[in-house]
Amino acid sequence: MAEDGKIKRVSIVISKGSLEGVYPGLIMANGARMEGIEASIFFTFFGLDAVTKKRMKKLKVATVGNPAMHMPTLLGMLPGMSAFATSMMKKEIEKLDIPPVDEFIEMFHDAGGELYVCKATVELFHLNKEDFCDEVDAILTVGQFYEKSAGAQIIFT
Amino acid sequence: MAEDGKIKRVSIVISKGSLEGVYPGLIMANGARMEGIEASIFFTFFGLDAVTKKRMKKLKVATVGNPAMHMPTLLGMLPGMSAFATSMMKKEIEKLDIPPVDEFIEMFHDAGGELYVCKATVELFHLNKEDFCDEVDAILTVGQFYEKSAGAQIIFT
Amino acid sequence: MAEDGKIKRVSIVISKGSLEGVYPGLIMANGARMEGIEASIFFTFFGLDAVTKKRMKKLKVATVGNPAMHMPTLLGMLPGMSAFATSMMKKEIEKLDIPPVDEFIEMFHDAGGELYVCKATVELFHLNKEDFCDEVDAILTVGQFYEKSAGAQIIFT
Image 1 (tube, chains in turn brown, purple, blue):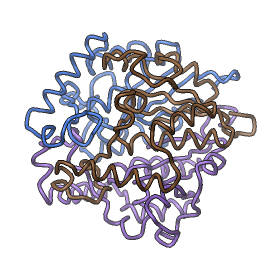
Image 2 (cartoon, helix red, strand yellow):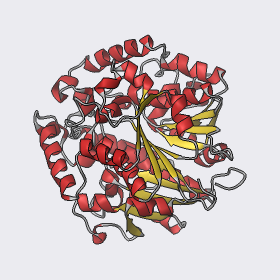
Image 3 (cartoon, helix red, strand yellow):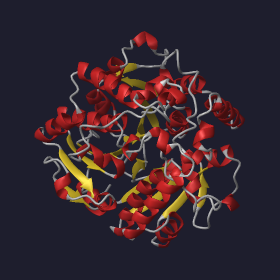
């Protein structure tokens, strides 16, 4: 934090793999870069899906377990309902000129944002560096994450 | 942060719309005001329900997708089960002298707390300023949120 | 925060009671201690299960409401599916030499980590100090939590 209290660096943690779990972190990280604030994202647990080549284009909206979806549980469970909600949300997001997850990550990286994945999770899910998109800068331990977060606001999403 | 490290301002983000997703942020924001700590709340994504006139009195407890509810999934799915759990939690919360969401927000605002909603989400859900309760001070972009958070601890709930 | 911006204290909040909701906070808190960073954990809402004697060995993975589980909702709902996913995750976590929750908490406490539970939640769920494992140092109000968090990064998980 600068002397005047202004935020000069944010270190965003993305820990969820649903579409509505990934976007808030991406939007907050990108919004920081737009203001000239340094920003990095640390993907951990299910959040890894957002930078995993095979999955990053297929993130889905959760239609059960979230009463704010205003959808009865039995309806939310129907096969195809998550795909439907996902398709709806993607269209709405596109209308706001917010890019799909893979393009958003590319854009954030091009704007100088840093992208890291959590070492313990990589091992937990038996993944390798090659499973991730090219924009991922490094695999970090939690200790290294704290080092990279010096002077930053950590925001766990 | 003051020189002695004491927290002097918190900037709470509420991103969920279930009753158990909204209360932790409200309680942490209000608890800060009670201690003389400056506090603001930034509502984003499903969190907007907590300050949307039509919805803020109708927030529900999620009875599926949360094993800590100690309720079998099949039971949690029954129509009416979420309403039942919601009614139970509201009663317990009332016993602790914690007000319902709408009154809690009014109380927080009267105590000098600031309330903001996220511009991108407002557009995503096709809402207008008039859809929100009177206590909402402004609709902010993510960049403006960071400006308002100067000197604050950001807590994303 | 030290003058060079290095993180010297973290104050982790654990608010969820599922296995995948508890581990990220434990791993981040423990990772901090390993680096010589002061660390405390504040358990609130469903997170209390992680330090409640009767429940801390029985935390489960949520198999519905999380599309990142890559499991169809109808399959995730089957009785026994959460137990199966829980057993799988526990095995994988064990392979990484990450201990079960109860041992993890003991280890963290032995390493000088502080453990607190939220007073309002204790009352909400009608619990007493005796319901918690011995490692819990105190029951704190939100105001006391902020005092203990002086100079720390608050990370809400």
